[in-house]
Amino acid sequence: MGCDNIINTFAPCLSSSLGVPIEIANFIGIFLGVIIVASFPLLVAIALIWTERKFAARIQDRLGPNRVGVFGLLQPFADVIKLLGKEDITPAGADRPIYNAAPVVSVVSVLLIWAVIPFTPIHVGVDLSIGALYFLAVASLGTLAIILAAWASNNKYALLGAFRVVAQLISYEVPLALALLVPVMIAGSMSLVSIVEAQAGMWFVVSAPIAAFLFFISAQAETGRAPFDLLEAESELVAGYNIEYSGMKFAMFFAGEFMHVFTNAVLMAVLFMGGYLGPFVDQIPMLGLVYLLIKASFWYLLSLLMRNALPRIRIDQLMLFNWLFLVPLSVVNLLVTALLLMIVREVGLAPDDPRSFVDNIPQTIVLFLGNAALFVVVMSMVRNRFRAQRLAETQTDDLLPATAGD
Amino acid sequence: MTFNELSWEALAFGAFTILTLGGALGVVFNRNLVRGAVWLVVSLFGVAGFFVLLSAPFLAAVQVLVYIGAIGILFTFAVMLTRSMTNLSERFNKQAWLSALAAVTLFLLILLAVIAPIFGEIAAPSSEVVATTEDLGVALVSGDKFVLPFEVASLLLTAAMIGAIVIAREED
Image 1 (cartoon, rainbow over the protein chains, first blue to last red):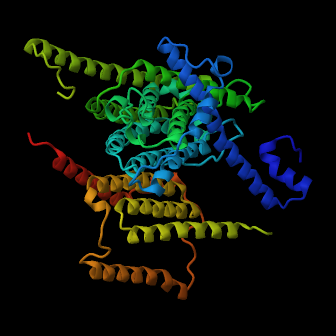
Image 2 (cartoon, chains in turn orange, red):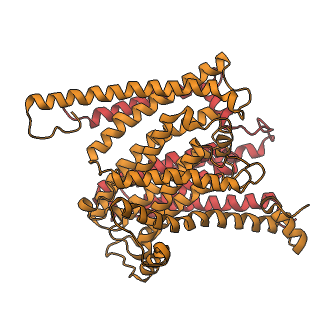
Image 3 (spheres, each protein chain N blue to C red):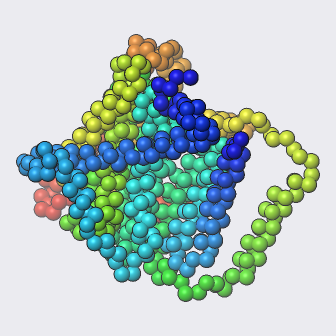
């Protein structure tokens, strides 16, 4: 057996060359794999901090970090050293074990998602048959970490922040899950590898643009970033759930948030833009990782742009936007896509060879037209609603702004 | 063979048992209700592990999603809103003996159901095939299987949801 493909032959090669029992070699192989998969997002987070600070600075007409290293590239390291040097404060009356565990759970809930992400055709942590559901299950642990952090801090501002978090995160999980179902339905599988492979003919962002939009928006809300940053809302809650945290524990929440944003970008790439697929991936699998990161960077930068360019929305607007716009839209979108897929399969327009671009065209056109029709209907409904609202405002000549609800 | 499949599974089974039972004991013995809720999450996580060992990854994910992600958070949230509940001074309440009786009876019944079949004939497993998520989905909607229980459960949940809305609705 050749020892060139390190992933599949690592354990046999180790046992044959060093005489290690095969079971222990397997264990070492899996152990190393876990370490690599878990460290990768942590390493990426270092680069993300720099990117985010530079990007935000440019939008705000500043230079951003530029003193430490070339273009300020070493700034994240300086930040970490500063954070390590800070005093580790535990407030009086805090529930110490929970207070200490919460930042760890917060980071782990994001790291666990990476276990199912296909990096290249052959490099996957685990190809779970329920990958998409696993993502939802693991991501819900993050909410628990935030609420426990706030409660354990024994601080009313932290608790206020946590109450908002629960309302926001649980609400936005609904459109997130419903949007996630659309690629699952088109691919006919919950395994992320199968979802990527099903896009060999056509990316799902073309056949399900509304689902991609819904997933992107709700994922942004799940990370608690502007315009959905009510869980931190500096001007109202001082800092929200993490107000009592200092030093590295505080940094862990932030590292978790940075990684969560990038993880969502990677998921967008995997679910809607064909993940690792691209030219020559069959010959050189490692190219898949490059394609995946390029696609993820697109969504990541879009998310940063959204964060920096949009103002924060009020809590009632946040809830109304979710329950009166995103949730109904995601339910209708799910039903429309299911119906169209069924029709396409019954009529016989479904692709004979899912990997062929030409075979995918009829199905994609039907789904895209369905999405476009839905978009037009929803947008005209929104337009009529707000026009009526504006007219009512001008007629009554009310100086007070109308609340968003009525 | 030093490590065979069985011993790994036995190790994992032991670990999940400790998580489940230890968490359950934590729930019962803790005076702080929020900590109790955290122990409950630990216990439910152990149960999710059992589902993985039983080759039911779908149920494991649902266990984490529903019981930890939703019910665990709901419990924590409800306890936090009633602050006086977070530090109970009494370990036992007035119904302690009654609930102990009910719990012991239930436990003995379950124990009986688990142990009794061991002395009878060893029945063959009902199926050799490991069911997939697709099988589960088909079973839930096929007429000769579980469509009726499934619909009844949906109706119950819908009724509960409407009830919650009615209670939470502001008076017009």
